[in-house]
Image 1 (cartoon, rainbow, N blue to C red):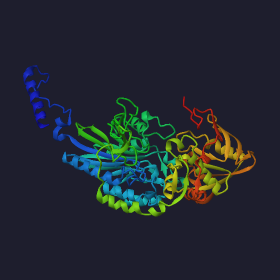
Image 2 (cartoon, rainbow, N blue to C red; image 1 turned 90 degrees about the vertical axis):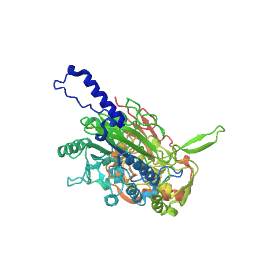
Image 3 (tube, rainbow, N blue to C red; image 1 turned 180 degrees about the vertical axis):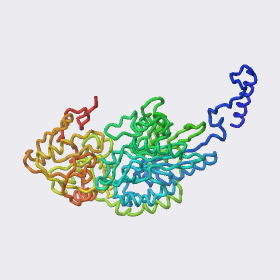
Image 4 (spheres, rainbow, N blue to C red; image 1 turned 30 degrees about the vertical axis):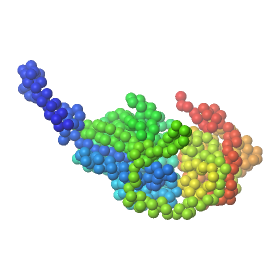
Length: 574
């Protein structure tokens, strides 16, 4: 690189001498060439690498196939750090949030092993995710005290008007001052547990970002400004029923103010087709081009630590350049079929040997309580469908089973279950306590409400009309009705096997999360039964012993009209 720079300077000097007095420079001064590459800039070029993950959701331990896990993640990050350092750079490690909720071993321990793992990996900062509010604030405060890194959120305020978290943090990275602003989706006010966030306000992230950027500029405290966000990436800004995400944020700010967004929440690998706003057909191990909007790079590394995003930056001439970008698989596997049709599982890239010390440390938490989690409580003759892509788009056997379990527990007429509270499926065969906690990890309680038929109609006008694809989409049992998706009204014909009457009284169950207004449900003042959702599902399975999945299959009780789909309300905006 040095030889190339010298040759370039010599060539420039020769050209100047040849042009002589024909030069436009009246003082015959030799203009210093402007570097166009890091090599030409030499010592003036600062290099650094940002590594990132998001939406950990309790996956501190590898899965049953030996994929991902924090010990392997640490080994990979340590390896990259050493490489970057040997080349004269430094590394910044960021998280897009949602450390909590998703795996029983983590949930039962309030994500303590996950935060310990992040400390050992040496994360520099994380955005606060909506699932950080799945537990009482005392748990969140405890997690903050455990973390050796700042949790950032500029747009989360206490009732007294002060921010709950630091808005940003400035890091010295290889001689550059890099400010990282934290931002959290406004949807947290809707999808966070209202029991825990009633005294907290989530403001517009774009407004807060502009405010903080102006503050940083006025103070002159940073050379580069990044954002670590938990807002979601939606191609071309098409966020649907979700709050606006990273693309909308980048487009709303002054070009050049925000150099990069390290995101989370939508749990997708942000790999784009060249020169388009469309997602690439990305597979593990493929090349990945991050999004670029209004001069801002936007990155997201799917979910669960399946990948470590690696962004290699160069800074010279007062500008930031992305030299290279990768989504590096963390021991992900692919199915390979040989000539005889035999299938085997192979690592997509070279196997990463997990860090032995961290693996030993986390094994304590993994083994803790295994006897209780592995208790077999029932069996099912077929797959119980709680897949996110299905349960948020149509009535499924598992969604309806949960609604049924809750209504029968307290003898209600109707069961209402938000699909966002169904977090996993259950395979055919034995059902364990672990399965229950994976499906129902939030610890919501079952509430009981009594209304007249007319009031139930008003309630279901809203609840049954929620759009497909959102966690608000309702799984409903015990009622026969048609739903006019355009008018957002229902016509009920039967409740709990009896003809509907506008004046009769009916009872229904709904999770405490929704009764308090979560997911945009109408706020209720119901009876607090005290039954925890996972406990209700546990006892339902235990009492049944053997589950016939077909008993809970959709039976046409709910008919959706004036919709683009017969499975639920889908209204395409004009």
